[in-house]
Amino acid sequence: MANTETTLKEALASIEGATGAALVDYTSGMALGTIGGSKSFDLTVAAAGNTDVVRAKLRTMEHLGLKGQIEDILITLSDQFHLIRLLTGRGGNGLFLYLVLDAKRANLAMARHQLKKIEEDLEV
Image (cartoon, rainbow, N blue to C red; front, side):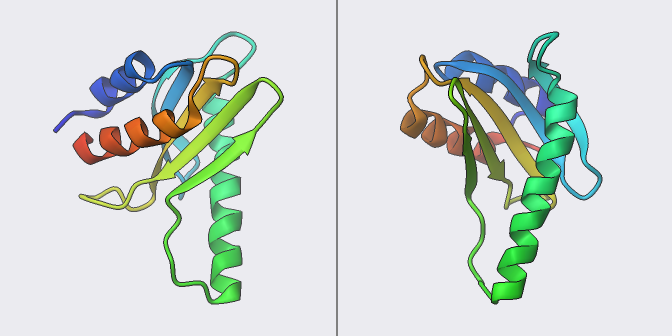
């Protein structure tokens, strides 16, 4: 079991092409921890903005009567991938891991696989 800081460091170090990671509470929009990013890419602002994406998808699923759970939400930009993974176990309800990847260096399938493993070890 790893704490938030350790988990985010592991994500940045172990996922090829990762440039930033955050643990986010989508009920409040607050980042509970961040690592990486840059002066031109504020992870706290991105995390807060992505709470709107999660909330919108959850509302849409509710309106459609969809019963499944969201595993990942992927946003592809010309030079980045943004991966949002909703947490499901051990008190993770209402939280998501947010990962920013350099599209030129990242292997998206491996990043998803590794993020799932990191989620399993996260202690919230």
